[in-house]
Length: 387
Image (cartoon, rainbow, N blue to C red):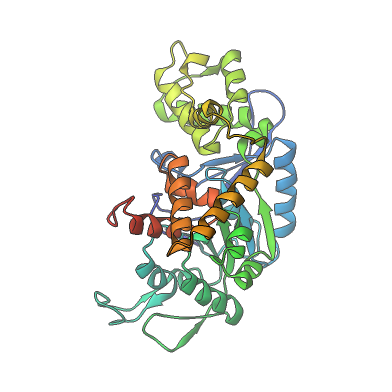
C-alpha cells in the first residue's frame, strides 16, 4: 500500500486511493462522494478535497470511470485547476486491479528542470553534485501500482522523450546508470492545458500524447455542473463544522442562490475555501448570503473587457484576426531584425499582463506549459529567476 502523507503544493505523494462512500445530502437520496485521505489535516491544501456525482454530467463521468478503471490502459485527465483531477485519478486506481498497490502522485510543475529527471527516474551515487547515495525514482516507487503525473504539460521536452521510452519499454534507467530496471506501472496523467495545441506548437510530443491518451476523462468545470454545487457546499459545511467543533449549521436559501449564481473560476477548491471562511464568520448557526465572500476574478476581467473601447471596424473574432494579419503584414514590410522573437515576446508579455501576471493562467490561455512561460518571462526581465 502507499503511505499517508501531509499534502503540499510541491510534495511528491505516496497516498492511498481516495475514499469512496455514500453521503447523505441535506435533502434527497444518498449520493456518491470521494474524498482525499486524511482530509481533516489538509487545512492548507490547494487541492480539491472532495468530489460528488450528483449533476448529470458528473454521473456520466462516473459511469465512464467505472468502464475505464478496471483496465490497465493509460489515462489522460483534462480539466481546469481545482476540478479534482487527482481525486478522479485516485478513484480510477481504487477501482482497478492495482488498488492494493502504491499510488504515487507527482506534480510535474513542482520541480526545476535540473531535478525532474532524478525525481522521476532516480539516480545513482555520484550522478551529479550532491548525489551522495543512490536513490530510486517515483516510477520505481510506484512499481506494481499507479503513478499519477499532474501538470504533465509542464514536463520539459527532453524528459518527455525519456517518459515515452519508459511507456514503450516498461523499464527505467536511473540517472548516471546504464542498467535498465523493469517496472510495471499504470500511468494516469492530468493537465489543465490543451495538449493538442501544445503538440501543434511543438511544446509537447505527439507520440507521447497518444501514448498517454489511450483513455481520456474530461472533467467539467464546476459552473458547468451546477447540480454538484449545493451537495458539495453541504458536504463542506458538515466537514468544517466538525473541525471547528460547531453544532448543526444551516445554509440560508439566499446563500444557496448566491452559490448557484457564482461562476466559480477556482472550481471545487474555491467553493471549499468560501464555505470554510463563511463558517468562521457566520452567526446563530446560519450561513447567510453576506457571509459568502466570493471571488470577483472573472467579473473583473469581464468589466475590463467591456470598458475598453472597441477597435475600429472590429465586430468579432474574424475582425480581430484580420487586424492581426494587417499588423503582421506591416511588420514584415518593415523588415526588422529578430522579428519572430519580437512577436513571440509581445504575445507572452500580453498574455501575462492580461492574466493579471499569473503564470499558470497565462500558460493555459496560450496552450503551453508554465515552464515555457516562466523561462520566457525571466529572459524578458518580467520576473526574477529566483521567483
